[in-house]
Length: 349
Image (cartoon, rainbow, N blue to C red; front, side, top):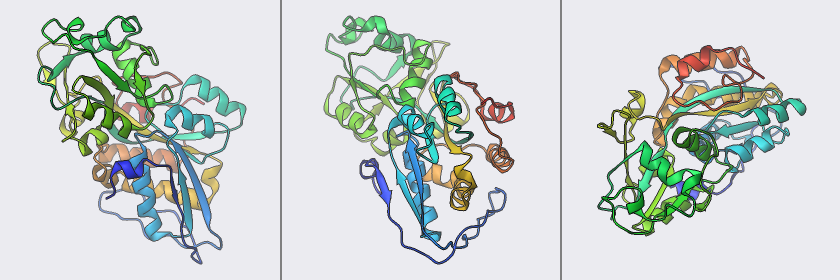
């Protein structure tokens, strides 16, 4: 598998033509594997953009799909969740990768342009607070300390480690994190500061998680946050800080286990793809989304994310088959909600 550094470039997968094309796949079970699609008379391009966090899953999925359906081309961008929704709600893309749910202003924009969509959870992520491996004083951090570092009131005021915790050295804090178009930024600020996008702004930003990896790995005083897959692939360059829970005693590191057992709070979150209903009328898009849901368990593990339960994948597939449109969130970010609960909700458009 290619490194995420290579994969982070906007991927345009140019495919060879075949003579035939697509049929829908059987319903999701762990044992079933969808049969290869039938071929179409002409090649087609599926346009995807959005979250850099979801990108590795979608990129790996498109490569796997192409092995069986080489008539299909993909363009896959990493404009960030917000940037992806801007294109999606204008009808410029078929699928939007998202590391947070669609917001009210984006719902309004989609409605204005006649873009209807299906919201499909595909995996879990654990937003990981990362520091330099040579940092010897920090192994765990409380939610209060994170807020003290990242809240708007910290701007220009909290500039050294000892200002956060007197036991820490009087050394400059070098902060780096996702930009304002990032769903990771939105979820982190909601979870830590109480409101999405509520954050100090005097820190280095990048929509490319690999930039965050490199910056933290090169500065002993750096602190940042990013998706779990990027930490996992770069665990020799980075150190994860355990999150002290509300009891004030338990410190939990991000892992597959702690996300599944819900002990990694409040930074575990679901990841989504949003599918344009009109685009889904095209057989190649319909086949790809069906393939995506059938293989999400395996591909999520392959790229070091955390899969949903089999029950939740089956429920997602049912919602997709009946073309359940809209969002279960209603345009508001939520921290700590379960996938099972989301899938049962009546969606809002």
